[in-house]
Image 1: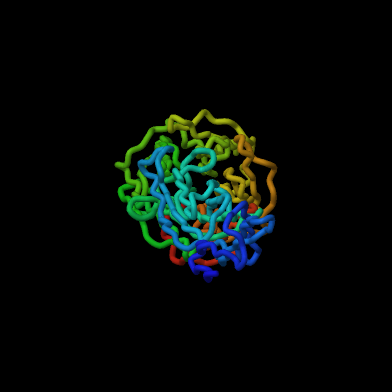
Image 2: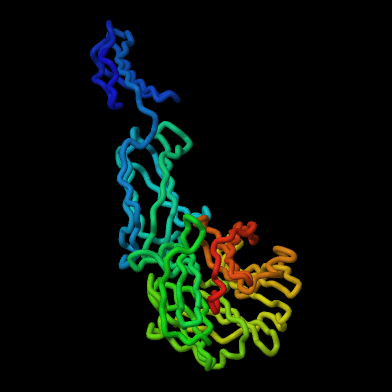
Length: 428
């Protein structure tokens, strides 16, 4: 009998000594060690004979692959192929699955199928399971498959890919080649009227690089917003000293300037001493705005609409004048809905968790006696790359601190990430 072939293919069948020359039926068996044996029985003169061949099947694994590192969604449709990896396997499988998850471990899309011979070749259109664009930035992928002789799947490979041209993530305005990178950024206004995106750097959890636009009045109030215009790039709300509110649409990877295209959102916004965006709290996928009345302390919700504007206000609370800071921090609980944090005059910090229906749950205390030295607290999205929303604070000495989000509605201890920021008129 010939020796087994190293490439895992069946060798030529060899007749066992003294066996007959006719084949009647055969059986194939494979053990847990990957050894496969094929035996055929035949009869001659009422005597059962055996034919056989044996080879060593390799364990199920990837023998080769072509996996693109980027899925570019700009210009694609739901019927397009944005990412098409290929894996060659060492043995046949009955099924495979490919799971894509974001940095927080949440499933973005699961693809399944059966192998064509020894090849797994899925195609992904860049959409989530609900049909919307996948978020910009890194995604993790994991390939699993089940051998034809097994009942459970084996994880064969894993890695990362970067989505570009997808859905804008919270507070992301920067990136390379005018494409958001999936990292949160901070907006600063200096005393010369320069409005600058301080670009988050996920490898260090700091800010590195800038996108600056000059010519702004120092009396403006700038509020980083989500993608209300529908171009898959985040927008910026700017309130002028006249009380007019505008939605500026700088596009991806561009600074916002007074000449940037904008939509007027009406007048009378000077009545509010606080404007902040927690992200989407109504569950429709659009960013929303929270405003507090200077005279009464009443808090209102302005929902983003499909027309790229804001709906009429809805009162949420009658008097929040006891809070000295109210900050839209995006999703800090991991449920996909925007949240608020609020600091009272005793420096207790509370969380208001979004319900997804345009309201918030009862407050929950996060810290006691927290942040008494801070003159600014900002929700900057994820600047550490772990998929969890973080906060950045500036103290009265101009030091900047980062508290990493835990993903469960709280924050870790602070880390100093910059000094000398006292000259900025505002951080948002």
